[in-house]
Image (cartoon, rainbow, N blue to C red; front, side, top):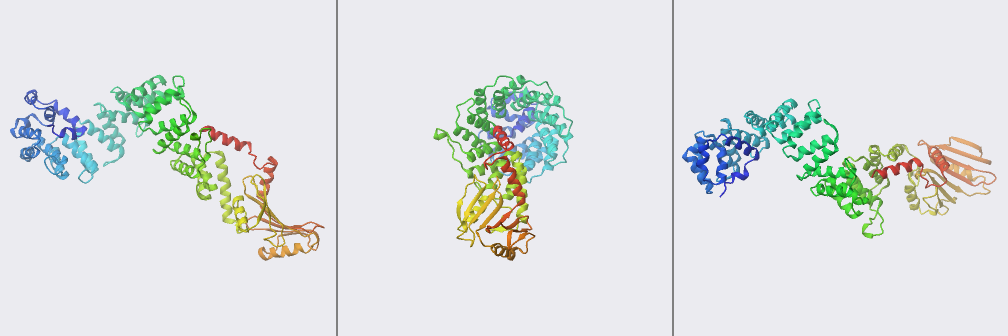
Length: 599
């Protein structure tokens, strides 16, 4: 029966024990050769003197037989007499719960006894317990003390741990020079992670002068040990010509070596080389093969790339459903662009002859995906999400949120919308002139239409492709016959014109004017004689809206016109571009095409 310590002992400790084992006397190994391999392994824990004692040997035999309680009974007196090996062994028994109830405090007690006698394994394990707070109070300062003691005895992993603590300021004041010192000590003993860390430090220049050549030296040391991460980083240096002449051939070779060790980021790089034709011809089929290797290991960037390739039919048969599956897998791992692509698919919908390949427009799904992409900081998603907030698609209208998101966006059309919405929000703060309970200075076609319908006013012509909507008002507004509401290309309010028919009613203008005086006070401007001939009266409202009452002559039909001078000028410019309201200016069309082509 194997002694369970073999499988539970930390790798760091095993490394140390191998070192100690080299110091064992050859005759001791011969004497124990008849025992199982695990017993020979355990000899690495203790001194030759310890094995010479009958109690210690009997403890081994009891442990091998599975009688841990008897083993503990034999080792405890030795530990109490100050035998470091026995103290360490008891510490492990209490930590693992072998032969005794698990008790971390007792484990720490015996580890401390052994550690104070200079037992490097005990020093390392005790430091780890303090560092993680395993069964005892977390104390990073004590962890550093014990890691230092083990490190000063040459323990590579303790040296690495010290490097990390100085690098991050854990239990000690952050000190990049000390961090570098301990990483170097560990790296010179062949510690892989320390070698890679040194490479990263020299590559980034964090706390030290950037030195790509030194970075390559350390990456090479890790790579030549067959380490996939070292090979990956070394490949990156050659790919971008950092510290060595750029070489796609060397980079690809290193990525391939790393990928064969099942390292997903390297498989991704190999695929990328084939997709982009780096160092060879473009080969989408091979790109798909390697992206799949990476994606199946959970690499979300590879999953996203596969979504693109299936969506575009490159290297594979075009299949939108499979593309959506890959995008979804990537999105589940918070890949911002995958969320964005899913948002576009659901916002725009896809029509395909094969029904299985079609996707219906779903603004709710589009909203959720754009929201995730935006929260993850993808700049293009800000604009698409803002558009949905602005227009109430898949969510409630929220111009405040739309404005904030447009401000963060990068697309030119989004920047234009930000400027426009900012003005609109400022307008809401100052607008006072109302029609149908709506502040008309800031309102839109959609809002005003709903309010007009709520008043039971019948539409004569409501067509969003036309500049104006026309309504019959005679049944609701006494004396009037028609209301014409005009909008900009973007459907912002420009003017509302009421018609009061009066072919031979000179006093009609006076009656209408007096009603408006009751509401708005005396007019700011007046032209003509209201008793005879053409005449007009004009009010300038605090929010910039103008109200004009006018009539011609001899036809005394009277008109009441609410209008925004600013929007009126904008409308004139737009109508000069094209009489067609659906016309898209060339610069806006260009912006839309550029955004589409990017994805």
